[in-house]
Image 1 (cartoon, one colour):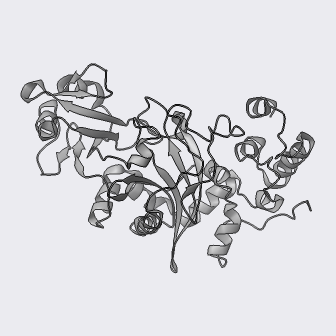
Image 2 (image 1 turned 30 degrees about the vertical axis):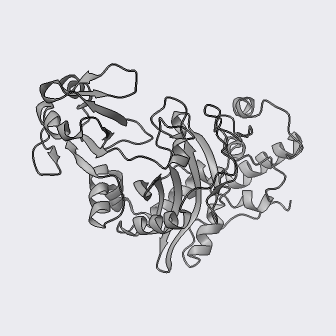
Image 3 (image 1 turned 60 degrees about the vertical axis):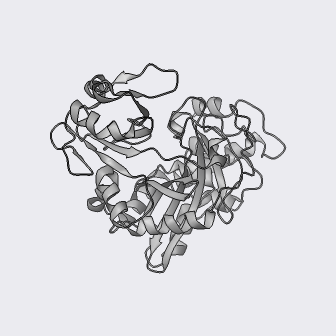
Length: 363
């Protein structure tokens, strides 16, 4: 606990925050009464005076979150989303906007979208030849958190085809790239690179900056419970928080950025992107109503899945589904000020997500 406090609590409280004795008392009460630790408290920026105590008490702890997911997303159905090739097939079959598929690269069962084999460096060069001068994206079929992702520009021609990850880096021959990267057990998903909306590219153009929408499908229709924008740092190809990305909680009604911060320094606001200098706070995302509709349609496309953290890009032609996360990291609830227990009980009151809450302290 002392290490956590030293990491996230280096500065004295501001005038908008409770004094430290009050925060310590709340941490102790939440730990004893709700099994919610100080790390979650500090990531959630719960020292803010404006946040009601009742909201803090009705967040879920890890055990409750696992119980909720077990009820909402049965384990036997999760692989339909967690396996990127299967997930892509479902999205395309449903006609939902997503990056066009180039193929599945695998040493013995790989196949391009035209049905031709994609199982060797020669196959990869043949499939990528029409994309010379453009970018394609590679993803581990069984990857998460941005691991295994690469966006590469296809260069050269014929037997001299190359792949170049970042501008300024030396191009790599397709043969060499294949030997280095084609080892993942389940292979690589290859997609066309999609340009992001200029509004988001201005924040950081080296990464695709996406929104994570926590969306729930119910018999009465889909409901998005919370959302936050993720923005990458200069030179990074991914916007994932684990890779140093910036978290920007959104106003759910409007799609406007409420605040921005680095999860490593959650109490330090970032009104502007520290690299580009472009304003983050107050940024209005384009076609927000369309994004909410698409999130509901995407979750509904997967059988027996009720709750997903859906990653969405915004392109010049509209929102586009990147992927679904059927076990989204529950720290997102802290960043979004989402008292998930209360929300789930309100959405489906006949089937509470977790056991009854203990009586909470009165403050």
